[in-house]
Image (cartoon, rainbow, N blue to C red; front, top):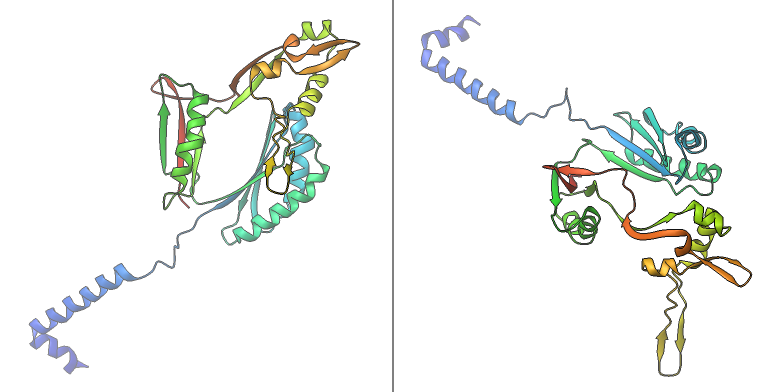
Amino acid sequence: MNAFTDLFIRRPVLASVVSLLILLIGAVAGFKLQIRQFPETSNTTITVTTTYPGADADVIKGFVTTPIEQAVASTDGIDTLVSTSQQNVSTITLYLRLDANPDRAMSDTLSKVNQARRVLPKDVNDPVIVKQTGQGFALMYLTFSSTVMDQAQITDYLVRVVQPQLQTVDGVANAQILGGQTFAMRIWLDPTRMAARGVTANDVAAALAANNFISAAGEVKSDYTQISIDAQTSLESAQAFGKLVIATHGDALVRLGQVATIDLGPQSNDSSALFDGQRAVFIGVRSP
């Protein structure tokens, strides 16, 4: 052993070269070694969103949130479960454990929500289930504003043109519109005029459901021709909605325009977005 150490004492240059070689090998290995003690981890969340138009927070909690909570609580891999109930909307978020299989948990959640669907009120919209892995915020936010178009018009343009193109870009998982307003036919009922004509809100809802729909009427064929039939059963303007018959009293017809004010506007004004003091619409770009 002394002979081995004496070699480096007698040859300091060799000792320096060997030390530098060991240092170089260690530096190279340090950059190439995989991190095993602290691996990169990402949390997965599953969100169940259910809308019940016209219901207050208490109704949402008792008839929507609670049944779905009881159904998904036994999903495999859940760490914590958080729910919120507000007017019209129920939101349930499932936080999975780090060692859980997100795909298995997603399929299990879908199955359990479908089982709970039969006990929900009949007017409840189908639950929307979204799985998200990784960071909960977008990598980029794009702002769109205009001095000519309102938010509803900007949103319509983004949905038709900008959003589809962004979602086809490599590395983009989703392009979510934030602060947008969707076009809708707004019908403002007048209780005084409705009472004078003996009309209720249920009469209006029933008339809209029965007369404003899309029908596939079929086609007409002969030996040499084939013609598609367009029944035009949907209403497309405020004037058409105003002429809709909602009730009859003998020979008298009560039309929607006689008991309501109708205009084309945003579907909801519950949320809005501003940029530099001006109304705008954002698009959040998320990665896979």
